[in-house]
Length: 472
Image (cartoon, rainbow, N blue to C red; front, side, top):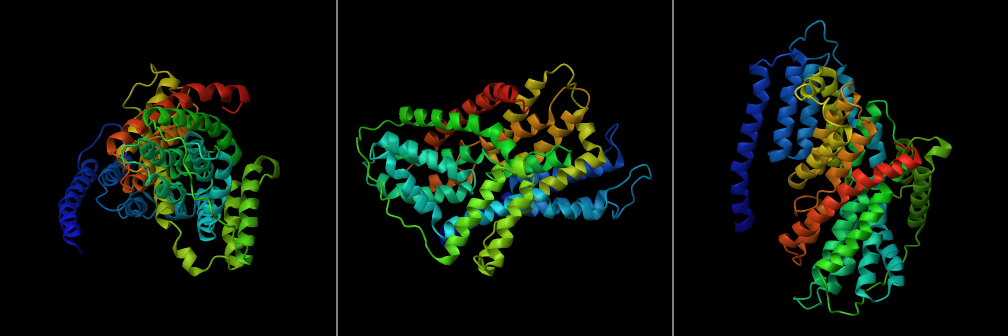
């Protein structure tokens, strides 16, 4: 371990200790003090909820560790296997239902997305497609930036935005590194990729974890959202935001450079395994987009590439080890948290703390989106969605306000995904920042403006489109 790593480790130890002590303290509060009108099960679930908030905010333990901790605590405290008995009036959920969150259908949807992303990287399909699709944009810097953003956004709809960012960075970094240090185009080009990846991820259920979390919670509430319906709701505003961002970056980071030449040499893999993967990739995407015609759930479709790629040995045991299981566990923890909050009555109690009757539905939805944006700027967007979606859906399901659960779940996921003002906000931001070609101030300025414009588009423009299409 280097001296720098040792110093960093020493700094992290007291930070983790403070986080753990704070989490433990908050966990004990509902167990020690009595809150009016909150049931015994609600008190226990409130303790788990507060513990999750503190641990997800402080990251005293890994996010996925908090997720599985939630599941075991719910089993031991509010399920039919609770260590301390619950009042007879309360009907606890069976413990296996909390374990079932680890195999929820929405996780199978996301698992399929991971397999497609891994295959695209393994067979360099992403790099070959990027090179092919960028060629028509020529050597004009403005057009190249547009091409980069469109391709990155498109890839991020079906692949991990982290993997997409890494791929596109490999294409553009060698070129912008040759530009003069004072040329603002360097910053603009590098920033364009993570921002486009973040925006593109909004477009599909598999694009980013907050989408999966919202869809999973909606399904648990009896509101299934098809792959195509999510895209119809999200893609128009996301596409508009992508074009606005392109215009904005050109204004914020102007350049005198008139030509820019990218290295676009790449070939498609023609091996048997690659051909099988190409076919599976195409079939999966087509089935996702045509769900309304054939009626096969997008979660079932998402499991098809997992089975086929393993059965044909296109993917082997080493490939399975590369799956981002920690992300799936994080989503599962959010699903389990939502179940516990609803079963225990904690959601109704929390909602009852505020008089919602005098607040318009549009204002409530906007407030949830803004809170998601702010919270996700400093902590994981998945953690933010896990905390906010259950409360938002419970509020929408109540009779106090005329709030559509689909809308509130959607805007929370979107608000979480629009947080991109800091290097820690999203993995794509971190990758771009690690290049050393952008400053935190530049990222904050661009990310904040794009996030706010995105909120306006999704909260003001999108509802008008949805109304015309009759989807919300």
